[in-house]
Length: 65
Image (cartoon, rainbow, N blue to C red; front, side):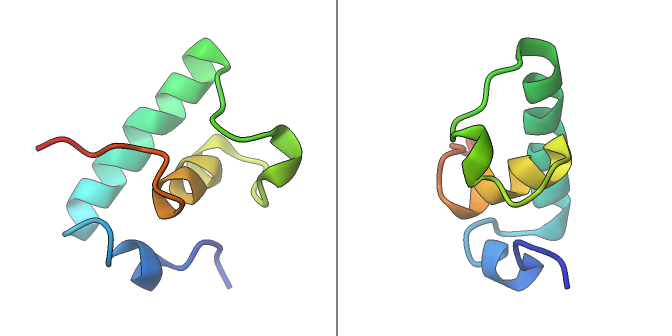
């Protein structure tokens, strides 16, 4: 089972395509700047793409149209 659940995140983001785009951009930002919005120990995922999805689920990433 993946964490966070895609079904839960789709209540926040209106489409799967936008979710992929937002998560990819945030993941690249994490790699380039080494800036995380939560403590390292608070993430369940070890990879940046999973961490980006966790941030989206918690509302830490602002999605602008």
